[in-house]
Image 1 (spheres, one colour):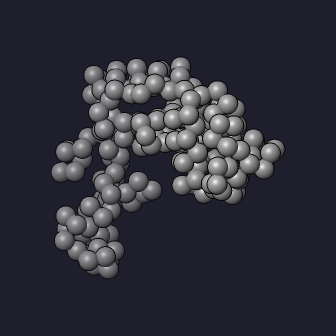
Image 2: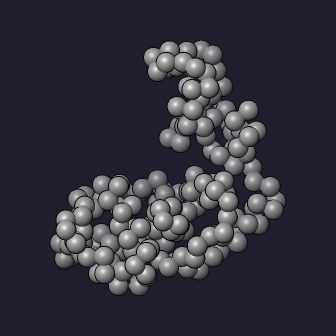
Image 3: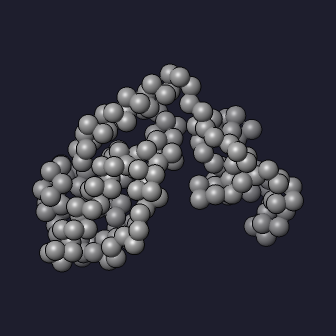
Length: 179
């Protein structure tokens, strides 16, 4: 029923399934494999084994146009006029990265921006929002959303008005692996 109601979502959040089944955490963990052997668990949640979202032809056209616009925008992407399901599909399929505040970057642009920020921080020991904005040749809104994303992911940390490198990415992020 979840896949029918949300045909563009890759998976159902595990807590939503547990809630729909009205099971406690221990019961859910113990019973799910026996009750639903065709349910696959992954990073994004749970889904029917073999499930792949299938956008309609009209949705595919919208997604392609959005991806072209994001790719052309690079580190200064346009705001996308897509519904939440399509935006979620772009991110879940690894084609784009949402940085919050309406900022979505094509996966390649995100990976390039991360490399630029990390290289700058490694070279200088720290950078302000303005420094990152200038390095990426973008605007303040995009630079701030990107830095906040890197803060949440444990790559950078804000110290006053400066960002410092916490840990360089130790390999490709899921987004970079999909690029």
